[in-house]
Image (cartoon, rainbow, N blue to C red):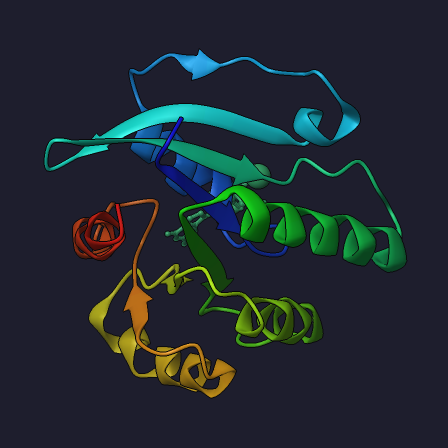
Amino acid sequence: MSNIVAIVGRPNVGKSTLYNRLTETRKAIVDDMSGVTRDRHYGLAEWTNKNFTVIDTGGYVANSEDVFEAAIREQVLIAIEEATVIIFMVDVTTGITDLDDEIASVLRKSKKPVLVAVNKVDNYQLQSDATEFYSFGLGEIHCVSSMSGSGTGDLLDEVAKHL
Ligand code: GDP
Ligand code: MG
């Protein structure tokens, strides 16, 4: 597991949808050694002849915002620790939320490459809404629709540059 790509972000932005798309038809790596890994799914993926492990973070069983925040922060810190590249996923239909800002501030301190994936850009018109995510100060943004797959190839090209 030398190349690891972690998908982080708050709930409902579309992390698992992207994960499923990337790991489709491939065998999931089952690992539930600890409570932390139970919140994470590991799968194998390949792009332009590069093999990598994708981590889908999430699956939090929590009701309160506080628990969410702590769990998400934990997942982001683990991703910074173990990932080669981090995909920070946000949702164009909601815009930036407080949780997004909190995750962004943790990621800004990371030395690992972070790619901002603005998800649910299902049509061309939504691309202009995505520009607000530049305010994270995490560099280029990558508009994708995990559902249709549009933009995911360009995102993976960027990911592959770091593998
Ligand atoms: P997660 O909580 O971040 O893992 O998010 P999920 O992958 O479970 O997706 C949350 C919701 O967003 C689901 O209803 C998905 O069908 C929806 N969703 C995911 N990707 C897209 C997308 O590209 N466009 C739209 N319109 N909906 C999406
Ligand atoms: Mg999920």
